[in-house]
Image 1 (tube, rainbow, N blue to C red):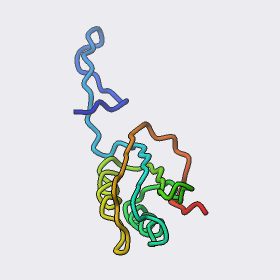
Image 2 (image 1 turned 90 degrees about the horizontal axis):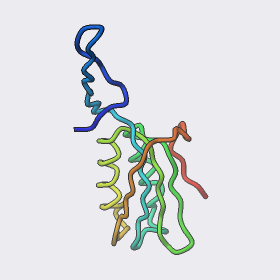
Image 3 (image 1 turned 180 degrees about the vertical axis):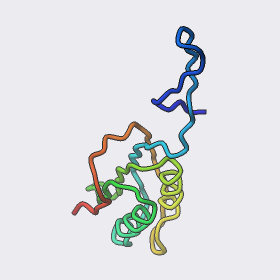
Length: 116
């Protein structure tokens, strides 16, 4: 169970017992590096479409080493679904590995964009 930053208290005014509420819509940050045949196969467009369909914000870009990087923020379950999509990739891609790192959201984006 995850503790939300917002807590409720139970008890009288002199005795407060914190009760932490699980928030299934808790926002998270995801940073991924995807390797394999992931450039020149519409991977960035695929990622943008999947992210927008789940109300995820962030960016996707091709890296010089041939990998693709994704930084995204949204609800935890939506981001987990995005990771599953990244592991599959678009039709012409061949994904070897998806390295995912989780963190706290920073609220840097209002949309999901492709970085050129």
